[in-house]
Image (cartoon, rainbow, N blue to C red):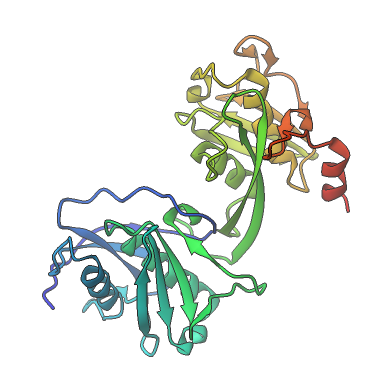
Length: 327
């Protein structure tokens, strides 16, 4: 197999889990980005690769990329993510873009960090192929299970948290309760997203970044303007202080003011260590958001805006939330 590999960037990546639907990486036509492990096997390094297979031959192209990921790079600084002894025995691409990848039982011989980075490398590399939207993993023809015995399910690059410049301390797993706007912009819809992440990354940061990224389910729309960037987030005395940049002021009048604010507040107070939230713009708490939501206010959870996704549109009552938060 003819390889044309050139180093172009190194990035620390970590790990998270749920539905299909991420965008394709932007590469020059005919060029792919291959994910290797660094020599310490603690992070991902990326290389350009020009495949031999015709880009329209999806199955052959997928097989070629898997072979590359299973082959030594020839450079000691770049370690193949699929280690010796671990083999992909079969792949199956469904019409909905779900690529099922089957491994032999040696897959479970990898340690936790190596396994997670192997999975990340496969997802990053193979979802660049046209028609592949997400990956689903199987070992010895059984669905891959996480450390808690749950099926990992379908994964895209959106299911991994990027945290450049840090070593992996440990990989954690969490389910985030995120509140997005309903299509009419006058209510909130709850979406639970499963996330793998580095212990260096705070849960409150994960919540905000996933809110900005938007919902996975079709019944919801983003409540936070996509132009928004997180400046800083911290927690003291069970109050979460969120500083967003000027992108947060971008107006989407289809989504009402309280829906934007309580999308943040309810999502953050769903975390067990947060009771209240204060929002600022570049650290400034003076003024109001739009017309009536004072930034100086320290907001508490309000589930009166939350709707259940069914025909009755029943409102979720507050005491249900409190019971789930304080069992």
